[in-house]
Image 1 (cartoon, one colour):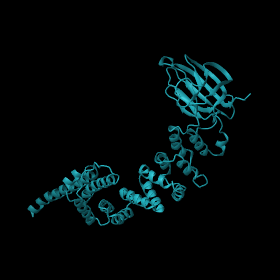
Image 2: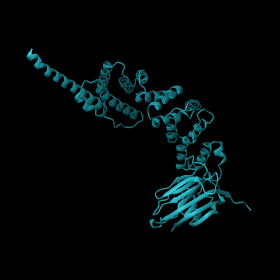
Image 3: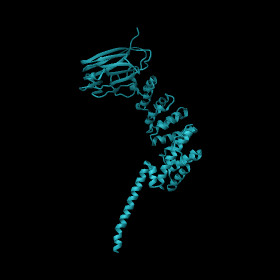
Length: 426
């Protein structure tokens, strides 16, 4: 009896040690399955999840090699033992019969061997079991697109975009689909449901199209739906057009993003009274200011119920940046008018400038401000838009410092009621 009692603590201790070892090794292996599959296999060579992780990486490489071969390119993926991959996948299925990853791997093997029907059945099974099997969903999406099966393309695209941030690979497929009347109608119907991935999709779509007008068609096609496109949905497209110097299309697209009240304020210069928060885009005010200055559109002095542009400088060197807005004026003579009040002290003034976009050198018009004006004062500056190399212009407020020693300016400036008018022909 005594020997039995003496043995019991040893047995309990051994059991506890064994359990602890199992917990540690299984937890470690579970971590290494994704972090380092080869090391995980050295610890647990027969673990189905380890084999599955190894097989998954190898199968993805196999598919990349096949795609490169179909495209006539040379693959840098290492050679793969297909029989070993199949054994690993089958072992994983034996351990867990309902295993979507194993089905997907077998589907990739079937595809690599040219068995598209077998691959379709296996990939479909994997996708049915788990929407997280991205390679299976992408394969099925590509196959449906090749077959011209629009509803299936839409279904798999929605599944991919709903579960993963995959707009980059999916957007080109949907862009190509939308180039057809049937495909565009189906995509438009899906976008009208306002899926949670819609904003991200519109952000990457411009770089996926071959026709720069397609994003605008899709965006404006939502106007009469229960979920019309927001101004923010237009912003990536507007930046895309601006970067490619498609200024006229960008301005037209920007107008399409406005509601009726905003559209009523559109003219040669938008929101010149600074009464409304910026809606974004190149054709509204961008306040891009830096250290040592506060710039805001806020209630102005002696302007009841209205706002104005306020700039306040701190003491010391400042990095003003700019307040700017893009405009589109035809060649001709114009006048910029507005109101100013404030107290500015420094070596160089604030200056409203009108310049041609993308053209270095002197602006085509300017008006400087320095000193004290305690009451609102009108100002005007005439300028001429040349007939060449000036398809778009910017109206910008800058600090006209030419060196760091001239960046010292203090005080407050207010601006209001900016307008641009064309000269009356005589």
